[in-house]
Length: 134
Ligand code: CO
Image 1 (tube, rainbow, N blue to C red):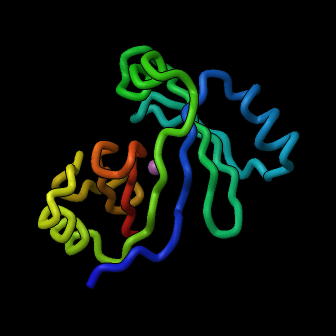
Image 2 (image 1 turned 135 degrees about the horizontal axis):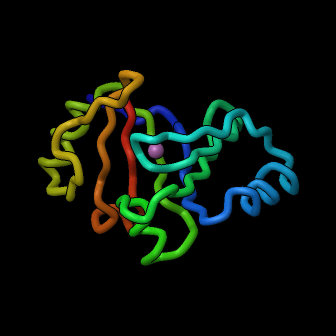
Image 3 (image 1 turned 45 degrees about the horizontal axis):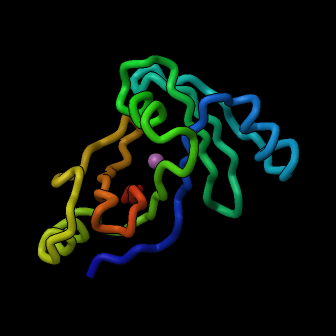
């Protein structure tokens, strides 16, 4: 049976990267591992590792992406939590069986080969949940 093993990352959507880093890096003292542009997702992402997981700060870099629309509608804040699963196919099958509302019915494959799928907030208590199989 598919199993969730740990939190991979927590993603926070921000409108001002420097201001966010003032908190997460400078005030809390987390290490900024990487800050990079991801043109494919029209966003800039900061990675701050923490005990095997990561805080990710995501800032939309254009006005026409899904992320930008999310930010315009809801403002900055928690965007999603990502959980690692050992077998994403059987987990998605189980969730479908339980009538959980999936955004991605089939896993998608990221540029780095990771397979992922999003679960709709209406089934999770209001939080967008991402599943990752590494
Ligand atoms: Co994510």
